[in-house]
Length: 76
Image (cartoon, rainbow, N blue to C red; front, top):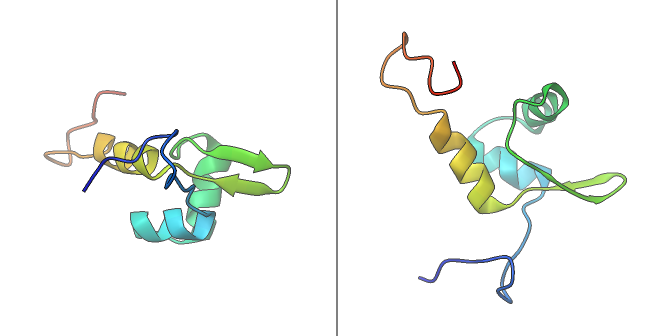
């Protein structure tokens, strides 16, 4: 399997619903994360159209990995 890049012909932006499904959360939760500035980076496709790069969504989720409940991560 080849890695998709922005310039590859099969690059496709995830919809909000698809990104939420990848993360295992509701689209409403993803909207709230976006509003709070705490979610994965998003793409403003048009005024009322949001998209997500699959690799960015995966990287955001991976960055939230913790080893224990006392582990605040790098951002703390």
